[in-house]
Length: 506
Image (cartoon, rainbow, N blue to C red):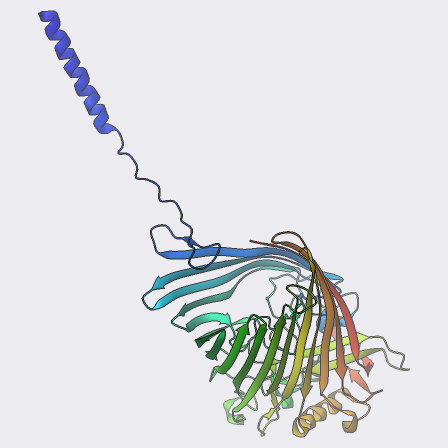
């Protein structure tokens, strides 16, 4: 009986111990909430766990090289690249990681969308100035001609906007712009179109169905929509030698650019008409408020664009065309990724001349001390034919043309400074700052597997200046590009560049 009693007591103790241990065991975890596919907005969207918001991540990694220039996407038409000497790069290299984040949430008021584009990149630098050797520092994206550094990394926010009930708030592609903008079939920056580069804005888009939409926008004009407001009274010989016809005398921002566009997007292609109003707000005639200032003048730009898809030459083939006319709004023709001052050097057979030089400059307006603004006229077009040879090979033929025209008063201002400062041999009668600029080229792309492509592009640019044939100028020392003081022949110039591009999209 005693043995039985001890066994019962021991068993009870063991059970109590087991019970205590069981009480210490962790509670079974809840089932994992796996990420679910969101099919509402197309492929690649997933529900963010615990929410009704769908998200899509995307982007690409690109590595490319441009031969015979110091810039990316732009031929060697200024600075050390345009000098065409031992300071000029034979190649410029860039590596870029591009990321997109797209979120969408269905609400009783419609879809709320946010979208952002983030860029991390590194660009080759160069040499700057005679005898100064290497200089360091980060490059600035889309500031053409500033890559005179050892090299630089950069983080950029290309796009960051919210869309709701037809409105767009934030940094997005201009409503003036076409879907292809200055890239109808190319990587090179072409004149003759609005800028693709994104800009801060408040916009409203009305969707009438059947692919017909109308947009109205107030967008930030700073940098994106401004070229130069030249105060010619402050022009210098050194500046004129680079195609800079005065001090860039832009005042503070006063009014956004006002945009209206109509787009018809159908299976056959696209048609778009756009209008822009641009306020030219200058600073002062001189160094202080006491010198007075020219009154504001509004400029404008108009654009027509056409895309024809699936033409008889093959499935997926297309023709894209854009034409722009502007007065006092030159950035809508020479957008903010292209140059507005050109100085390209070349050879000469003229006796007594050291070399030849092509000079050109674009502006929104010009003025002199005590006078008002004279608006600059600009117009241009670009286009491309895009052909698919088979699922792996495609080619494009493209071109862009831009023209700048000054009125007689503006020419008088510029030529007065030009003749006096650079001793133009043909005098005032041979002085004409009007010019044309064009780029033509071809691109071929090989896509061996989905989302991986290798491309080669040939870009040929032309500066067609209007100074009298056979004219010469006397330039001061150009120490930044190692050009000696002396006599130079004014002459049209040409340049050739090649782009080699590898892209992996995801």
